[in-house]
View 1 (cartoon, helix red, strand yellow):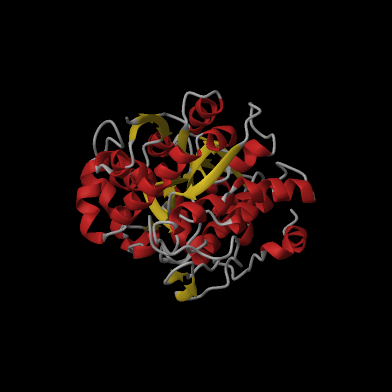
View 2 (view 1 turned 90 degrees about the vertical axis):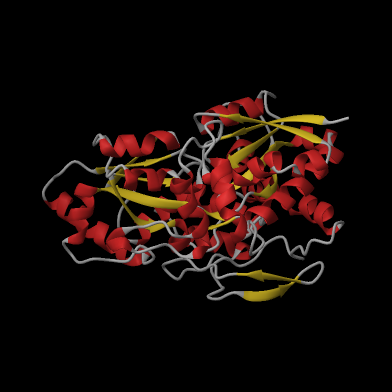
Length: 404
């Protein structure tokens, strides 16, 4: 007998693992009939998950943390027993803003520092001329997009909320908002940066993987009570999703995956628009192409829910005034990610799993082999563009050093 599960998702390339699990039979092989429901906004996904319309969800990585800290409308405890890949976002600006940024010289898309300095020059000039602050769109307050954009701006000498106003828009509206002049730039997942480029609305100036290499993006979100009451089903789902991630991570499958995602019921964009994010060929300023590391659905422990990722997002929630810092709040954030569940399930089928729940973020400048439950795992590089290090064991000091 098949177990039916409903999952919300947004039309983004990083929904690939869920879609592949359904369409390639990985879920069915585990006895799961996976019903994928396309939504228009992350608020819809959050609310439908909270009220029980979805058992599971494609979710923004900070969303379970925000829910457990009481920062969302419903009293609902969520957990993330699995990540859904690394990277996949970019920052796109209007053609008019890009022209102003270029006045100080061209820059490469993979050089987040140079792009940030170019934008900072424009911001300083605008401030001196008493211009209206620029507006940048992100998809939700509790999103990797919001926190990575703010981190990049601040490290580039730009004050979020003062020098640049940050507004919320659903991913599919970003390119149209840029083309119509309603915003000056946006940070969003693919394919919506490539859509903006193809429409002639603007260009990609840097990527998530350039700001923080091997950085977290989406997770599988599950209500904690549902996970406890349906452990065998959750375990079967994690096995299916891991097999789907393996399939998605194979370069030989990228064309087929792009065609799969292009369906109107999923992303509704041509396969040629979706493929560049999968093979790392998206184009930015001066025609520079992103690296193959742009989006990682499987390699480098891309599906492991590192608690250090959860704590970094928490540190940014504190930094930008969403929550006050306390030991209890930090522990709530840490426990929102459940590597223990992941390890229990996938170790049983011989998957190499990290032996630690956290790691120092930003310390690896190259790919290295690390010990795992079986065989070896390869991690890194995972550096921040400004050279900082996040040690989750020194959370208090990190938060103090980043005070606005």
